[in-house]
Image 1 (cartoon, rainbow, N blue to C red):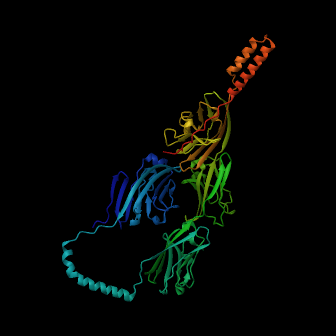
Image 2 (cartoon, rainbow, N blue to C red):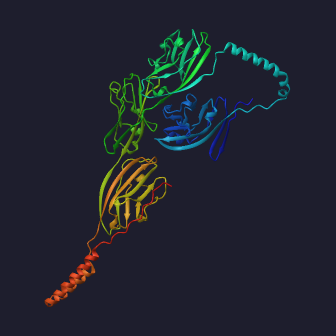
Length: 562
């Protein structure tokens, strides 16, 4: 009998994989060049249609299940040498119909997507086997016999009330930081004696109740002193479990199983626990400051724990068994991070980040692991490193051009948008540059063909703007803003430009001066006439000196990425 069908066909939209429900596993293929995988810091499998999209994450240090969707717990795996070999294929065990959908395989380097491929998985029901000759003959003979047997079995089952039932499923939500949460299990009309009750989570024993007493010596260390059941659970028909101090690592499915004295399963219930993280904390700092603190105050914690600070899957800092492990950090953070020496004693896991860079902007996650790798605490901090510079530039009218300077020192992400705008006395788009475009984007028509940025400004770290064919009306305040692909502002600089008009002598003034020199010896009346003429000419000159009133500029166009 055909149990598994695996069909992979290359289509325009990507790879399509089909597997029958009930198969042991299915392979989702993903291959990248070896040089790409070697330089990558992470390989990520996800499904965008899910609220928790992460299916599997592989870092250079190993698998990371921190943000994995609970439905994929203990069901995914990748090759141990995936990032070294370039084979990023994902093995998905026990595929079901709900696993059907679009999967994305992405390689990332320092938080930036490098390579991405899509795959369509279809989990189908097994086909019905074709009818045989016997199948058309035997039914007439066997149906009466089978019917009698089935009715007898149903009667016996009802009479004996076979105790094995399909496990119930219940959803429970709790916010990180709550004192406790109850995983409910009321047995109602069922009465048990001399049984063992066992709560498990991801294959670990969470709590054991036997002989009418809790058995703390039978549970995993991660749950020591954190679980509790009613001492009279069987009499009260309440097998609910109280889980104290819920932690991020506690999320997922819990199974409560009732065993008979002989080890037979009498009853089961499943509870899915969802741990909601606390709201992320925002920290803003201006580029140029020496350091910034990412805060994380905690309660009492055991000594044998590990603390990890991460940024875009990059290892920022590790604190374990006292000393700092700088050799495990991402190179870009070495020598730039610090936690206090007595972090656990002082209940302070805050991280100090020094020598700030623009690329430090983003989301930081601090995770506290127990000695066995169980996630005990998590904190999310969003850091914004902003730059605001100001500069004054003066130039005389008549010069061919002027430079509005903006040089940077740090590396910028590959995908950024640079916008120069006139922000006073009017708001106009002067120049817009997008690193993903090979030409400047739309600008106000008043500045058409009058602005220019240097070639390859990101590589040369020079975002300065040249403004040509200067006019008196070009005076004003200019602002350059640099944003990343998510629209988060990374840099900003303000340049105030002053275009000074030249003092010029009019023709009428020069004619009046010449006439005065030639008639210096004429009579007083002639002098008066000349003086009268000079006054008239002077008035004309004054009128000619007045600058023409500038016409109202047209409205600026939107600068949008095409």
